[in-house]
Length: 283
Ligand code: SF4
Image (cartoon, rainbow, N blue to C red; front, side):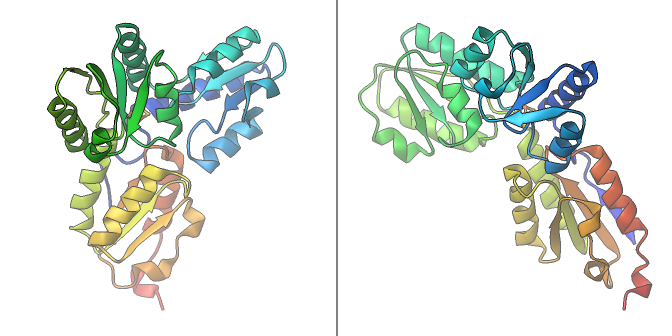
């Protein structure tokens, strides 16, 4: 059975950086905490917990003198300020692409622009970005939402990093159609789109797909959904132990991909497990 791994399966740049910073902090040995789970991988979170890195919901739960790690999709400005005020050692693992979006919002806001953020209002990354606005700020999920916004003469637009370019383009067009001035920063990161395009191609070329990643990871769930629409023999697993050899009956080619928060060690374990299956011996 041939196993084909997608070229960009697993950690994106920002998640890799955040995870490395968390493991480095764990090795230093002081009391270390993450504000929320560092990434959407229960196995990475558990491994860090075993090394003494504890996820907390609030800065107030951290002991004085402790270290707090900010997750890759960032936190609200007030939470960061609270950590500094509490004299905590802050390891800011916010992805530089998310940081850029936060900085653009702060600058545009200071320059008198009302802010439009294209994204999902309940996502923590968007809530963090929004918190950097000093004045009016609106989150829109589509160009239709723009019609419902109040009158604005200067609009500054940024996007959640995982939005599609087409989506941003539609919102910008709707803003421009209202008249006045619009300044736009394309803050989209292509890591998600690259993984989705690869998954589509792979699902069209194999007999069975295995998608690896946290069941709480939105980008992994989306990858699995995309593959499933093209190939009913698609299976989403978090770990190698969830692989069922019955899935591979009569299969010649298996495609494997993984969400942006899936570590390499789990991908390797899944591939080893699939490679060890003798499809001719499946009853
Ligand atoms: S998906 Fe992009 S923006 Fe998000 S953490 Fe990864 S590299 Fe950063």
